[in-house]
Length: 385
Ligand SMILES: Nc1ncnc2c1ncn2[C@@H]1O[C@H](COP(=O)(O)OP(=O)(O)OP(=O)(O)O)[C@@H](O)[C@H]1O
Image (cartoon, rainbow, N blue to C red; front, side, top):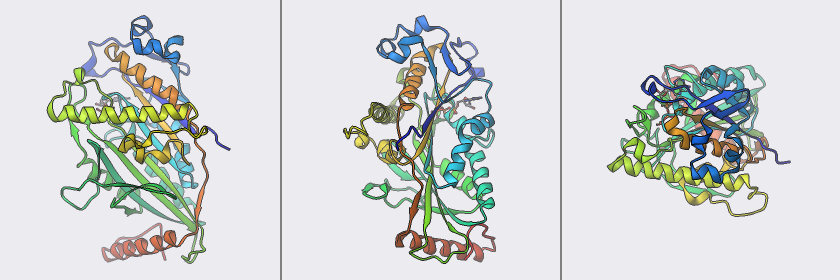
């Protein structure tokens, strides 16, 4: 039975030190994000067209966090349960969406301010360690979509080539040639994330000293089978994906002052976010159930995220909002996106695979990795043959 299986979280940040001359026009009260300067906001023709905003300039989500909220609180209240779901065999996607500088990366987590990534990783490995009745094999990949090119952030090549996306009838979109690393502890993943982040396209803009110029998709595949079971084609393997999507921020070129290469990046970012908005809009209108066309193919981002949008996946979209008056229009846009995303329906089932491919992949990769790690004198905690 299809049910929402998606949730939307809104996080309003406080004004930063650099914004101390700005007027703060948004607040969180009870479960609502409220535009406190609604008359000004309503001058925006865009907003007039939108019923949600016209009603009251008040928005809500499944979870709403105000400026005093911490990363710990966001993780525990909105995300923790989803990490448990992923370990139980359900596909989970967590995506951060919002204007440039609104707090997406901060919410995902940085070494200075641990967030969803760091806390989620600790929980995953703790939960797995407690599941003594199952053996787990975890694989990790990390890609970037920059100027509509998909590249492998973990590629051994110095200058990674753009990768193609192939549509597989069974597993959905596959990024050809994307590397996957077996990971056995949070440090393994954090090391790979650091390695990938160092390659990610980042630049300073008028609105953010360290602005991400690309979308990144990091995916952990969790495969598990009964503990101590011989690997064979008849061993059922439960496979789930935990996907984290750090979107580049939507931006107004007039505000960021983008020129040249930055302008091209900006245009690609905005186009792909528009495509994402369109897919979410169609899904929110029930297009999937009606068998109508959903424009997944309009951007690499929506092609890759197809399983997370309307597919077999629990998807959480965290919308981040800057409270400054001069960003009112963008904040309304983000919050309208949140309202639409709330209406998207996904169907979620635990996937059990009993195919030669799963077993063969398990054996080949795990054995190779084990040999490498043993040769390096490292201990392997999760899979042992
Ligand atoms: N909730 C918050 N509490 C404290 N500081 C925050 C919060 N959200 C964001 N910041 C700070 O605001 C600045 C911009 O945030 P961040 O880099 O996360 O934005 P972003 O949405 O990822 O931007 P971009 O799309 O340009 O990459 C950073 O200095 C960050 O530390």
